Image (cartoon, rainbow, N blue to C red; front, side, top):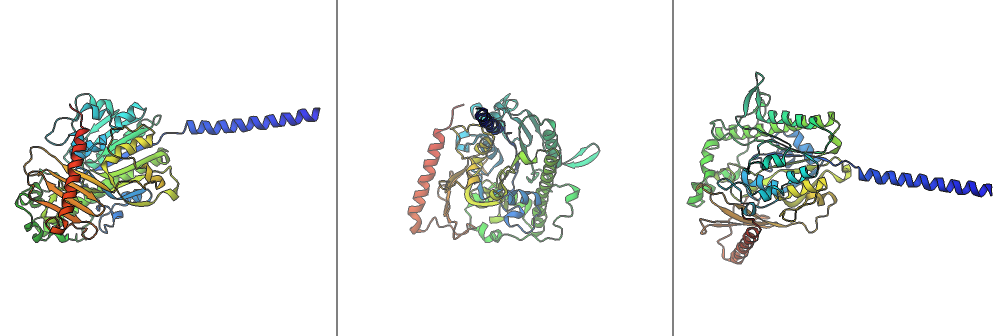
Length: 467
């Protein structure tokens, strides 16, 4: 009997220990820390203005590290290539045609902002911050309701701080570091929005950088794009020859010497941001936050560097639409990182991705998709086409335009100039130099993509809320 009692006691003890261990494991799952999230946005940085994209001249070691050690999206696009509309899309997960915000438009609808990723994160217990360029206009009180900390900075790029000259990118970096250090009791989401490398349009020099970047690119010769040949510009219709893209070309690229100087200045400003990213990552390590902080990086629109005789963005060519984008998530096993994806991803996807990372429900109104499916390569049904647009009001030098793009074709049309359309085979013509829109054998294809644009516009307008 005593032996039996001992055996039963041992069994009960083992069951109790096992239950405690199982309960402890369950408890660990329950109390698992939510990730910190840093969303870094640059202004006017095109997709190939980082070393990882194959650019042999530009120096971006910290951006390259995020791309090589994370998930890099080779074909990332903005749905509207202008800062105001693109930033509204990033915040709300909606197309311009739905959120209806751009320069010359009313302030963003409150309902959209109360579905924005920072508002929903703050509501879910995150500490939210904005540093740098906000870039959108909202109604009174909305900004305070979505950000715990909001430090908006502005030009000029070079300022005196405590008696020393400091670049705006470094000032933003200092604010970001202060935010990271200020409170480690709650998970945070920091939206760090640089003005760089946007040109200072009112200044003859256009680009400004700190003294530590002076020596960069001095010995380099920047290659001139093939489509900068004047023949490409001369073949354009008159309304495009007199657009803002051409006006700014005279500011930046109208002589070989100016081209070299301006592109090098553009690169120096990007390298300055890169150095700030290095400082941020060092701070995360020092504060013990690096292993639980996800970093998302992208540009707010692309940028012409003389292609077609253009400067700026706004239009629907690849130089204007394509941006760098990557996600670095240190919580994932190294074997699940270091991947490059060919699929088409959009600025629409940022808001749902951030909410998904934080475990916050994604609003059904969002028009983008979470990029978290790329963590597990679950992308079988990912988009293979998308609609693009630019609908700025009140600027005659920026033609309203629409575009439909898939993996093979791109169709472009202009609202005020329906007589001019463009059709490119992207697989055979990556530089979009041969317009096939007027060849008889592509007439049916032109009609098809025109209808696709019509359908997209109708769908997006239907989802717009009335102010």
